[in-house]
Length: 440
Length: 177
Image 1 (cartoon, one colour):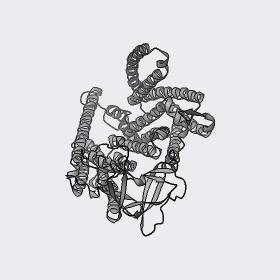
Image 2 (cartoon, helix red, strand yellow; image 1 turned 60 degrees about the vertical axis):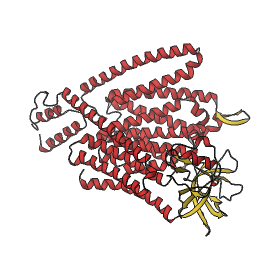
Image 3 (spheres, rainbow over the protein chains, first blue to last red; image 1 turned 90 degrees about the vertical axis):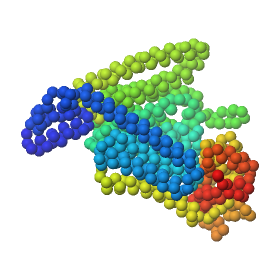
Image 4 (cartoon, each protein chain N blue to C red; image 1 turned 30 degrees about the vertical axis):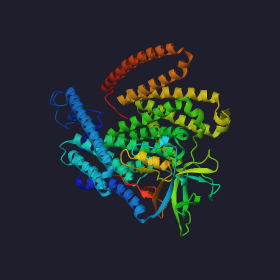
């Protein structure tokens, strides 16, 4: 092999190892075939024995979870202490306390994770805690100035302040907090403009596009070596928003009264819709380009396309609002509601889409060997069945029989789904070993 | 990540929080103080934890009696020009953009929270509806507020931003032990 080829192969193998496609033993074995590394001894306790690796990963995960829980408890304690003694502390001291706690926590976290690298897991937990403290600092500072509770822009400030931290500290937990704050801001902003009742459909229309965009953003991370492990958090949250939106659409009552109220007047919300519609399209096109190349992308492409087509369909229907609605008079008041025939069609279509997407999520999870996708799909499938049972079958049966039948169905479903889930996860492991890759 | 990169990164949350603090301090220190009358409201959904929810006479604007530029929709930004009448400040006109002010006027910026269902009146949230109190002190203030004895001092700056500075009961500042 030429020197250039050797360099290329070493770099590629290093990349595959970082992305978790191959383990350390396999990497050294490949390189040893081309004389680029010593022949590794067979996997044993010293080098990459799968069980040892699994134990090590398990221990690391426990340390992270315990540290994270500790960080959250300390955070809650500090916030409660400051909040309960709030009126007794002078303003200046309040600010010193808040700033001090936040930035000292960041500093210790950075020291542990990056400078000394002595306690990376605890360091990660402290960095996460400090990012929570940024929010507490903003909210408690707002309290000094009697800023209205529930002011959406406070959450936006929090998001802006911590948005680079997930990448800078290479932490998927802080990344999760970033996504959470942004999603929270959106719901506060949208519901703040017209009230919760009038804007609930609008919120989920936006969340649907947000979910597709997040999924696509996750896909993009495969090409970023350093942040390739951000793919799963992004895509899991993206799928959650897609499925949660369709679950909401599958409920009959929200769109019966409010379906025709989804046209927003706010420029900011219109802008958000445009931005997320464009990013959703880019995500779908991105999936389409890989469609022929990878079998695993096929389900992903169809799921994203279906979710987006559903959104387009709802949006197009709003243009025909007058012909789809009827005016009713109740208690002397007249109000507009969706035509019952149209409402039934939408109910059937949205429920079907929820089930197809839930199954899609399970399939994507199966082929990509991502357990959270399977769990999410299972969860929304069960919730969808429960909803259908209580909204349709329940009405048709006598109450006592309905409860007994419901209980039996639930227990049966639970047992069957748990069995299937285990089979799927086992199958995923076998598939991974057989295929030997875990690409996007 | 080295020390320099870490310090640079820390500048981001610091700048965001300090900018927020600066804007509020500017309104408090440079703004003009005005006195607003609170309005009694339905007490059932008011006291939430350690703050009192205040409503003002200027929270509901009757467009039949107040000049305005064009119709308001829920979620619109609204600007009000206010001037002092005897003791309290009241709204002279409302608009969608910052108004030109006379010497004796100040302006406030808010969000329209209700524009229909109530005829020609619009409901407005001015961002000064929450007043934070020590634990357990809220109920007494609510009683006074609903009896109509409360008013507030609000600081309003040239950008129409406002900060609630002080709560008064029977014209006396509320002091917490």
